[in-house]
Image 1 (tube, rainbow, N blue to C red):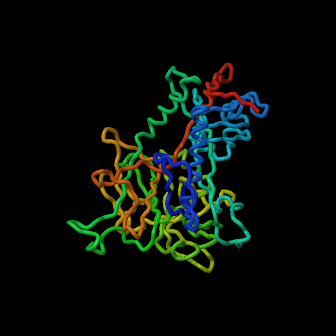
Image 2: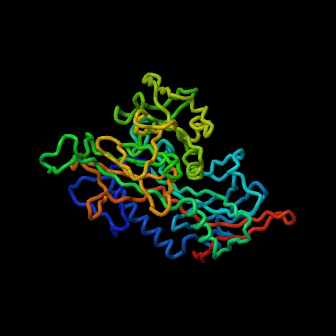
Image 3: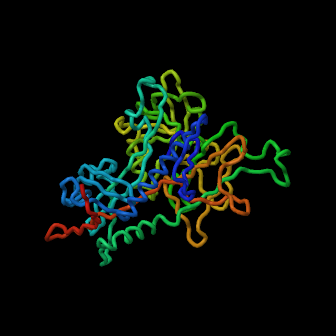
Length: 454
């Protein structure tokens, strides 16, 4: 979640049931957000325990077929019925749509990966949560604070996507009982095991006490920060890359227009800390690229980051080192106002060992410096090469008063490697479609119903 947070504190292993305020105390964003996370964890766990990993209410709203039922198949598309479905306890709601028109799909008929196969295939749901700011959803902003005044809160939005999985020539066709495990195995075959990360601050060599630490010891930054380390290009350690931000990737500038390598933005930031400078690295994103990232997490092609070459504060324009329209991966990104395009700043710097796409190579079993004494280390399973999925991220709070990162350590005092904090994807099988030259097609419904009462 790329929001302007101080830290993210929810941990289900702590078994906390509520956050209780005390009189006369400072209110912190992390504590209010943890209460929301505790409640969501409870409700969704309860729903999953009662309904199972994926289920739909049968007969809800007078619909005998229920939600997300594959209604028709026409060779290059299919339709699903309106209604609800719960995936790992997460409520998914559909108004009825077809494959190409799904609200968060942003599919392209020219891309072979998006087109439906001609052999038997499995249709399934991919479900995840996306953070939405006032840039992506302007109605969040309170205009009484000024048309260009400060934003206040952000939202999370449930995203569901209709996906397909080719079954291949094998004779096995999953049914309602075997489909969940079949889908899980196929997903895990590509996505497991996940890469791990540890974080620390570099300490001086030799014996030192807190009283005689050198100026080079510990965290040396001037402010408390929430660092974000995010996988940019997915794959194994040989191919994967990463980027990082000291502001959790929350420094964003809405785009008004793109002309060649010149980008006109609505604002250049509230101040020097939350704005742009020459040689900063920026990424162009919009609704489509964010949603496509979930689909393209394992493709070889990946959008690049751009270096800021010039800034005109009067015209509010930024000149990049290359024309974004020349990027064959996503030439239209940033040019469609209805998709809420923006520039997102990353802080690893163009001169700090970046590659041609503006990111840094992942090197396992090696402490990699970020800045101000902070270091990270990637590692994985010793028996199998780990996989790094595009969009995976870790959050690292650092505090001036301790001169250290907030990161768990083992009994030996060493930082413990952690799985990514997100993005968490959830999956549910919907149907198997078998194209048939005689009958047109055969369809097997894989959804699990539960009794619905009012």
